[in-house]
Length: 408
Image (tube, rainbow, N blue to C red; front, top):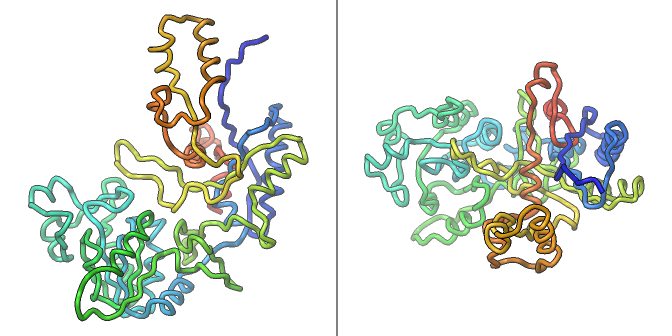
């Protein structure tokens, strides 16, 4: 028997350009089967087909425009609105802010510091410490911020986000007021409508604001981004679970692409339909997921990648759970320290065959990553480019559509 020399294999499958109205399930199945035939690889049970969320949303036509956001804010929050802890992003939040500011009298922007939720800096932590600023309780006005830090530019994008966001609000005719505070309860009483824009702690922030103690405070409406563009609409997109969370700038005008809905018009889940289609064509029981951002933190920039609410908005049942892994190097360095070569290999194989169904808390699994399978797999599916592909004008991505399709 020939020894197996290759472990896990990831293949980037090229697919046609995907447009609104295209059948993403048929395209995914056809692309995988065609690639398997051309490249002469076999599909196996438990193989995973990962589809990037952007092409699912595009096939759905799941888009909104700035005016749609403006109408939602008018209807739900009124003409004076506070926006609490948005991330610093031209692609993710700038266009949302434009919609929030349109038709508003005032927009009060509360920014977290020294960085936003995903690690984008807005002030120098060393300088903040030098000046004795207490990030747990101190609130800075725009004037205080500029006096202390000047015009701080993001070290990677070169953008002064204070001025950038302020200009967006002003150009829409609203009065911009910007404060820097990590005490979200301080927003109470400032304006009648509050929109929580933080991504992963939005529910906690809403609770803190609505339960804050105070006297003579007018009633306020407190919503988060999941509650805008979250209802079915005859002429535009929507997402019933995530609303504006996970949205991206879609063009140079005023359009945003929303996070995809995981089901089609008849209520069928895309991932299940892909799984069933591959089963019918090959007899193999594969798994499937739709993925967005990965979930990792850059060790140099300190920026957390996950700007979506979740890594994978939908996946088949076989991907539920976390890895149940043995720490091989621990076993080789301890229990099987005396074993060598094939003897060591046989011993480890036996450990794997005999391992418990749940290794949580066991020494043999210490050091393995306790993350959900969908988060791990989605992170491994993040796009990459090979230099040769760039030179030739092509693209190579570990998903079912090219970045060219994702941006057309």
